[in-house]
Image (cartoon, rainbow, N blue to C red; front, side, top):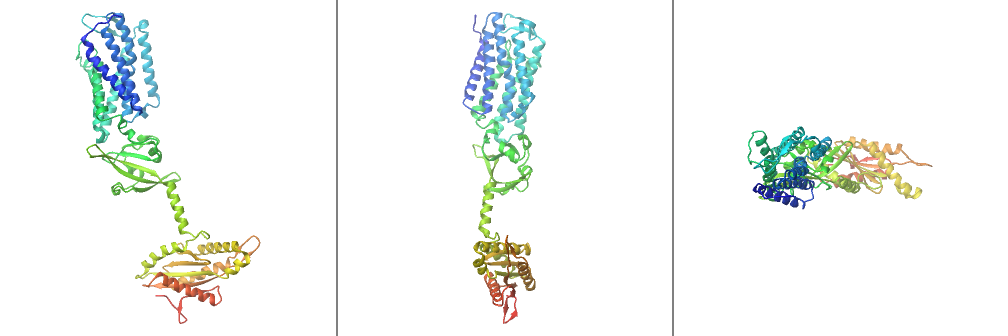
Length: 520
């Protein structure tokens, strides 16, 4: 094969070196966009190399051979150019379905037409050499226009994708988006100047390949200076796909611009685009108050179907190298299991293990604020103390296991006889206590009598016998101000022991000198 030097190849040699260098650089990265970029640069390198060989070849036969081989790169190149734009703007989901099949079919069909050209002339007609022209000259068959339309649509599609991305992206990614937009537009502009405007900017050679040199420079700026591939195809690898947390990227307007698959699942959106452009409040609900974060995590409950999950939400700024805020990131950690464990521990800490009613410590935690609220006001507050009659005898007669069943039975019966607003707790041993809010002395005494009667009427039924249960109760009621909750409980306890002394199974209201007293 005879070759000769022509100065026409010099800009294409520079373009070839650029595309090869960019391909080698992108090989150092392992994200999907980088892999597509390697294919783009490889296709352009094949295209450019074969064009250089076409220009350098002397015979018509050699030039035709390199023209055909050139289509191994020039056919997939523009299509991969479009695919790359989808990955760089996080729109690769559009490749699902028939679009991918159409693109592969277009490449394979074009290759078949090119390499069987001698049988049908569908691609070119009347290929010849003209003096002074380094490349072959030919007419166009009908399939050439199909190929040209594919090239135009691919490059135009990438321009549209980049333009839309530049329009909607946050300021943090504007520079990368601008270089990508310009790089994608240059080949289209070069082709249109010749085919639409009839302007031959670079006489005697194919301007489109030459303009890919400038595209390579713009992509180099996006890659080397602004680190486009390092920054995730523009934000997508800022979110870690497999992390067990939901990551949502917001622009300066507070709109969602990116989110990882975990976030898609908890937001109830199978497609990422379902939440793009919305605010977190639109998706997560108004209970999320971003303005009140101040670097302190919030807790957020989300209900999806019949399942409720709890998340810890962290809200942090995304800063540019100069420190300016370019957006924010929301990170949601699923703390459902932790919250359930905390609730279980809190329940254990607040509940009597045997009877499953409030324990003494938690009773005081709840009763003391209520006492302080009533103190100094016109409210009313009563305390009922209850002691199971002859409990030691029950233990001695039936055993401690039956004694435990008796205590559980007493707690169940009393809880079922009280109002929801009444606070009932195990005070210790066989003693129970009840805090009654908003009831007079008479009403509180009536509540105590109701408890006594309920226990007397409801024996503990065992497989082989019934155990009758009675209780002694003491009542004390607070009006207006008082000294302390302990004093009020002490008065109820005194009344309780009066009931026990006078025969048990009765209710006694706190008295002084034998008269009914409302403790004040």
